[in-house]
Length: 316
Image (tube, rainbow, N blue to C red; front, side, top):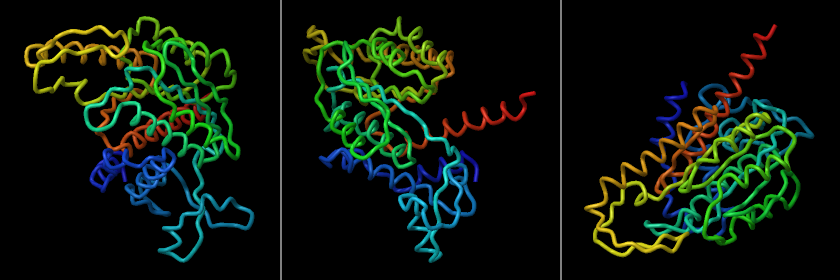
């Protein structure tokens, strides 16, 4: 099965409705639901198909970690199979998570912060299951909290608790957390940067370049509410900037065209910057099922892995 076919298969599967998912109060439970739905949506097989690019299977041997047993395969074959991930080397991943006030906006029953925290928790939970070390750095106009990358009992729970903390400062400094992380983390790893990126990006490129120059693999997740993308509001009203507290009267019908052009130009600038630096970029709407974001994340990591292996194979 090709990647495109797998993507179509996942999209046609029964995905978890984000609105229903956000009704679950426990963040770790939400992450578990998304990860289980992701694997289920791929209709994985131990012998063929797209899933073989994520894992290969081998029969269980005494002493193997039972966390990686695939119970669906057992139900079909009455045999124990272990999921063996392509990259056997444990990964070190740090999540940069924006907790500024702009993330507290939401027009569909939940906020960007709630959705983005679920995304961050999903990535952490998924990578933790693979035995990878997960770290977290939260920020607004300054760094708020840092948890170094670890894989030990209780550490995932610490990350979940940090992600559940409410938004803090009013403004956003997109470059500051990158500089702090670069000074703290010397070993190469993966950095997942989650924000709405609704802030000046003039200093962001140089900061991201610092990470890539150090050998880090970076994935950017730009999380936006549907109303922020289209200004699809019904009536004129006084709008207040969550971060600056500035107030302005706007008629959405009159302002929509110029607004959409400006927001699209800003998002295009973020995307172009990432492409220039060789960084994966996903723009995610908060009404999008999270399994799709996880799938794109894994597909990009597999693509990069194949490129690295090909370069190593052809190296003289």
